[in-house]
Amino acid sequence: MSSSPSPEDKGGTMSGKRAGAYSGEPPRLLFAGVVGLLLLLVWILDIVSGPRLTISLFYLLPVGLSAWFLGLWAGFIVAGVSVGAWLFTELSTNVTLSEPLVPYLNAAIRLGFFLVVAYGVSTLRAARTRQAELTTFIIHDLRSPLASIMVSLQLLREGNGPASRSPEKDRQALEIGLKSAYYMESLIDSLLDLARLEAGRMPLQHEEVAAEELLAQAMDQVALIAGRQRVDLQLQSEGEQTLLSVDRALTVRVLVNLLSNAISYSPGEATVTLRARPYEGQMFLFRIQDEGPGIPQEWQRKAFQKFEQVRARRAGIAVGSGLGLAYCRMAVEAQSGKIWIEQSSDTGAVLCFTLPLAETTADGEDVAL
Image (cartoon, rainbow, N blue to C red; front, side):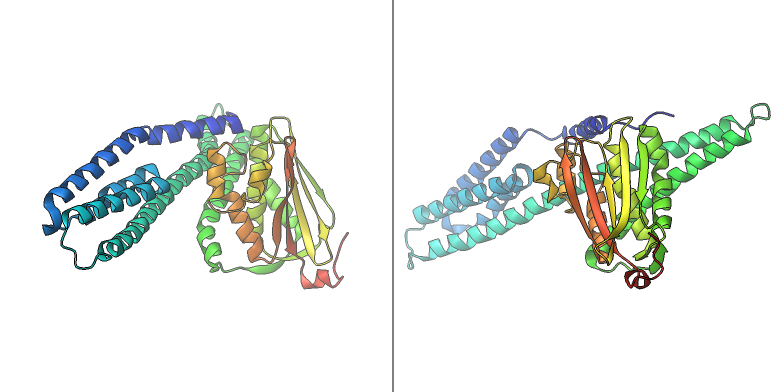
């Protein structure tokens, strides 16, 4: 089975895909020239038509095109130039104005309208670009478990002959496929839950769960990924029998997300350590430490925001896959917990989150330390 790509390979792959996706777009300089020519054409038509025809709405064409292809500030600049051109035409062709201030009031109204249009078009473009990049990231993240499932099925097919039948190999192939399917299911569930968590409409299934069960499920789901990356997983836990009041599935997905990120950005032969222990009387602390490139200081506050991860990954910063950290923040906060980056340097990152203890545990009962 082929090894999982390194973070550097991932960054190169993603950059290549983005380049391919947008390489068909003409350069910005060409767009600027087109917008300028279009603006000049509309202005000439405005001068030729005079006050008999009102074609000022056609100025929206260069405003909208500049905002879409060149960005928000370009749209604002073209909006200002368009209003200036219209005002100049109005003052120079309409010499019988009964109210001298009317053209200036009309210009102010048109400027406000053009600015709103430029902002709306630019925002729509940015949302579309973020969505396209996010989709590319998500597809890339899903390819790894899908590849493992395909490999396991191929192994089963190749070992289907009577002479080469090996029950042990078949069991291993099935185990690989099953773990990969569970991991893919966790990624998909995280994406489906994200919108409901953001809107506060996620139904939580609170139950009393031993920390040991959550840790075991999460470690089991990422064991295959760690093996492919040649990363050593270590668990250091105090109070494994401590009961937590959490949504089991949601909490396991948070742990899987954070552990997967730590594994993905750790070099081969590195160690990812998951520590867990009671914390400050009423909470339980999970602490994930990796040996990857770390998260730069300027990105640490933004790392848990929904689309900042997309921007960070575009810049080659190791902040996780898909919307993983944004999902983790919403899932943890929905269960009355907190999540933060404890430290990050060129020798690795440490991410922590807390979740509430069950009432019996918080009261000092049924606690195993």
